[in-house]
Image 1 (tube, helix red, strand yellow):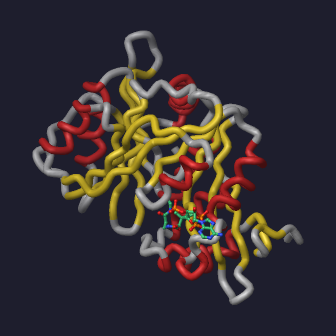
Image 2: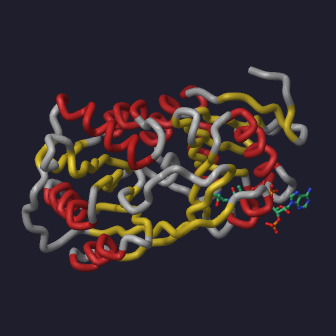
Length: 281
Ligand SMILES: CC(C)(COP(=O)(O)OP(=O)(O)OC[C@H]1O[C@@H](n2cnc3c(N)ncnc32)[C@H](O)[C@@H]1OP(=O)(O)O)[C@@H](O)C(=O)NCCC(=O)NCCS
């Protein structure tokens, strides 16, 4: 607990006991109440909240720190009854001031983008969501990851993402993640990808690969193992991966703007085809 106030509302770091209040706030903003996702966020991130004197939470924001380099911002929510009085920007400022990293990353809805721009975030691209039941998949070149692959997965991921995501990638088991890898010619990995569950859908991501053909193969092999609908978020510069979604019957669901803050992101976007999830990068 803390006595500090933001715009008159007590701010504090939330924990898993606050999960019901977080889900209630998400519902208030017509976001899905993704319980497993919030549980993962409580394990790997700083979840900040403003207590509402009338009960529940007035606002949340989640800051996931990757080394000294990048903080991913997600779950920026302000209760409808409390919006447009500066709570969102003040809570985000509070989280950024405590992150201590050179850069921050987020993907913005059309609601959030003007606020982020005023705070100094810069639009650097677009991330599109595709969803549906995949069809016409054939077997490709990947294999299931084994525990011994973890160091190579983390090494490739750090090289491409530009910061260490080991805590996040190892905690993805919270959402029942399955990993697949493609072996490279030199004993390293040419790519890896994961699939995990959320609210009756299988999320495909992250996808990290040396080229689009490897990324497409990883997606095909992951999607072949899945029953029911899948969802994948794709950097729209990755046209060959977007073509994969169309070839396999997925539809465009929505898009968000990729934004950076502070120093330019060290991420190699040419090899980072899909994030783990929009809330954490
Ligand atoms: C996006 C969101 C977090 C913004 O929260 P917020 O607390 O309303 O944000 P702020 O009050 O800091 O800024 C929003 C607007 O209020 C205005 N504002 C800020 N303080 C104000 C005040 N004292 N009086 C009147 N207006 C004010 C801002 O200028 C801004 O105006 P604009 O939208 O026309 O540019 C909130 O609308 C929300 O939860 N939306 C749904 C979920 C969502 O899309 N989240 C973003 C995910 S990327």
